[in-house]
Length: 222
Image 1 (tube, rainbow, N blue to C red):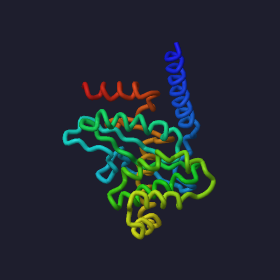
Image 2: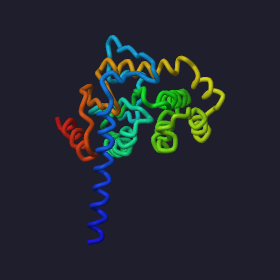
Image 3: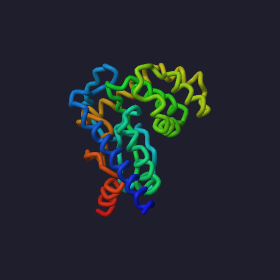
Image 4: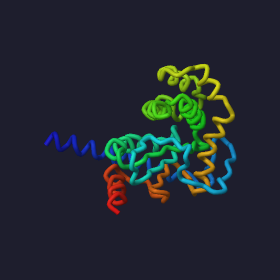
């Protein structure tokens, strides 16, 4: 009886977590686009994925591509992070998982976090910084203070060349690379985060790992 009670509590917490995540997603209005007040115009020929997009998995024979437009400070993205990780572990040899930047204007540190990830990418550490930002989100997210020093600390933890990281973090081309993803997102109708595309088709954020897995299985069975 105690085990059943504990199981019900765990289920309730998971359901509540996803409900909160979806609630955060739905709170964004269609005009809440861009980042930190930057007016990001849609790409003329928007694409869900490009050759330069960051791939978290790249199987030799990819049967499906899952793209996520994300905001590192977004609580909904944080809730989906372990789901995506579990899917990557299960389907990484068949599915290409792609992460694209889409920092939202209501999050003070979303754009700097994206620049930190991009600066880390310049040293081959995108995935490491991606993981670090999501696993520590509760420590720096939803703050009204700038957290560049925190991100710099993460770069040190990852063993990055700090002189290069600092230069890349402040390089206008790094901010431009973040906006490059945003412009595609805006052009594709992304209005909140996370937004997922399966082989170029935008989908509603699945309510659970099981639902997301079913969508992937259905596509792979075609």
